[in-house]
Amino acid sequence: MRILMIATNRHHRLMSRMEARPLPIGLAYVAGHLDQTRHTLKVLDLMFSDDYLADVETTVKEFRPDLVGVSVRNLSNHSYMDPQWALPITKEVIECIRDNSPATIVLGGPAFSLLPRECFSYLKPDLGIAGDAGEAFAELANRLEIGEPSYHDLPGLVYQEGGQIIFNGGRCTSEFNKPPRLEDLDMVKYRQAGFGIGILTKLGDFSYPSSASTTAQPTTGDKESGWRVIRPVDEVVREVKDMEQRFGLRKVFFIDNGFNVPMDHAKSLCHALIDADLSLHWNTCMAPFSCDTELVGLMKQAGCALVIMGSTRGDPHDGASLNDRLEPLLEVCRLCEEGGLHYTISQTFGEPGETRETVEGKLEFLRQLKPAMANLRVGVSILPGSEVAALALAEGMISEESELLRPTFYLADAVKPWLVDHLKAEADQHPRWNLV
Image 1 (cartoon, rainbow, N blue to C red):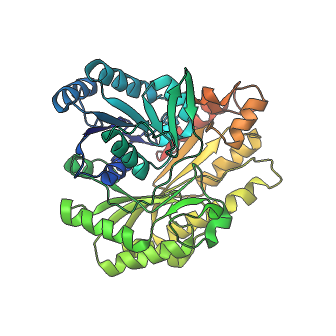
Image 2 (tube, rainbow, N blue to C red; image 1 turned 135 degrees about the vertical axis):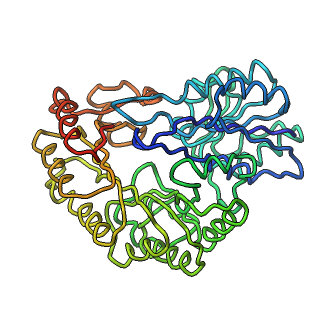
Image 3 (cartoon, rainbow, N blue to C red; image 1 turned 90 degrees about the vertical axis):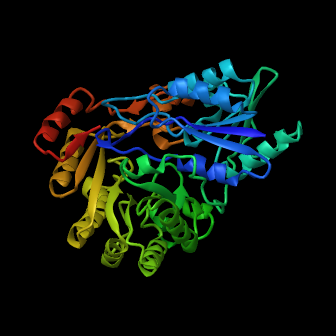
């Protein structure tokens, strides 16, 4: 079977300011699971396309695929100040495929997994797979190749039957035990395109794990800790070595909701990277809690150049004072500053319960820090299934979660009339503050 895989992401800004083009590592992992003794595979990445629809049309006509896998990375850029909805590009791509090929179109990716039915309804593929789709997509391809009509039992599958969109529930999972296929991607351009080549270390939900997960032991996945994938340290190091040997790459972004959680896994990985003597230059995301001086030192010694730090989550009026909520984050930032580890930080304004007092408290908190960049986020980008989504429903901001297919933000009524102007004025006084 001839299989074409298309990465549709074209968003190339980190924090809406920094140039950073993320390699489609999820699609590469899925491609790596395909049996290439049975299938002929081609990957089309639209990140660097000057005319992406022309590239799709040309590739489809020349390659003549039987099956097309389309990956959707994000629903939007999550920016209140400059909201960009990502799905229309993917819709155009699918329509272009339809106009030029009878191939079966299968949709997947992180954005699709958030709202499978809604994405399916809007984008109109033939099939969809929600979750980490490496093994599931490979199995689907094998069944389609032999003409087997029965594939509705595959986990995470979305399809249409009798005029209804059917989602068989849950999300498929992957062991991520096969290396990503990178040969078809422009590795030279990605080497020069921002934060480095992505390598997966851990995957959790779409928020930081709770502090309870700091004691979790590294496994393939640990649902109780909030992690669905924790890759073994030796696999991660082996993948780093492979990228260096095959592509000469020493700049890496470790894909991780919170590199420092659990801390013993983070320290083990740092020790392994140091022992491997790779001269690695890497960045990652860091949870705003669970850190110590030893970990910061190990990260620096292992080659960490920058960490992206998120803000704490929760209602400013949930019973804890603002200072109590920010204290763990302040401690982690101080440890980074004392250890010479550069960091960026995000702070959300306008979350549920926000008042003028809490806004000023957050601004005063940021003034104490010395980040490489501070990202002031206006409003909460509402994700389906979140507490903020439930609140938006209760307050009548949205009538159903399907509306979250488009960029939707929660902004507390108490601060909405003046918040943007106030933050703009503050950001103008601080060159390293960025309003999003």
